[in-house]
Length: 257
Image (cartoon, rainbow, N blue to C red; front, side, top):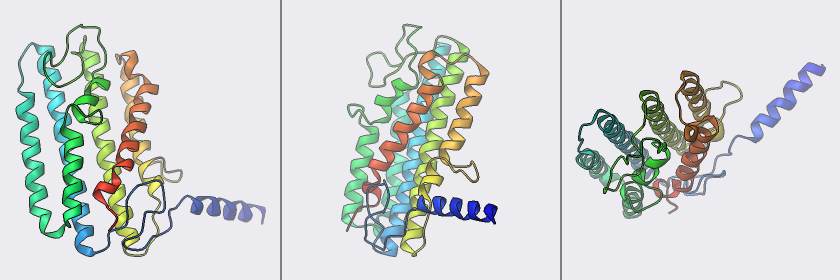
């Protein structure tokens, strides 16, 4: 009997972490900004835009990866052209879904695109690149005179670590965007959804987005060669910032009517 009571208490505690379903057009009942889509068309618009933004983040991260590898090898890489291609693909995806979207959704998606791609914005992928390619030991800037922050890694292991962190952060961002989409769909259809377990740490499965990110970080540290600015503490700090930024910007993908 005592064991059954313990299970019941645990179940109550777990259920407390699950966000209750808000109705269509209502604010999300958790730490994410924005509202549950008010129509099926607007929900589909938000879902497709979220996927497009995830692909954009991954593509720009790949551009930075290729830029760093080229710099270490002494080659020149057209990083700006690479990002321009990524932006063109994103805008094609946005235009394809635009018939489903409200004017507000499209305007806010444009704001999010600007935040991610404008290098003068501290929240942009270019501005935050210096937190991944952060080791200045080589003394050589990745994009001297350009708009990308960061340093050329001094060793092969440092390059391997920075590339791994960049890819891991992009995967985390994509996973968080998927969690937001699942929450929006669940709430729209009147179901509860444990968005925190999906996005952060899942105590039951250990398969939350942060769970997987932390495992990748541990593997990078175990490999050796990560600079001090990419130790385990700093990698987790980058994850916290990434999730926080996406949560704060969620209202751009799921605006209130």
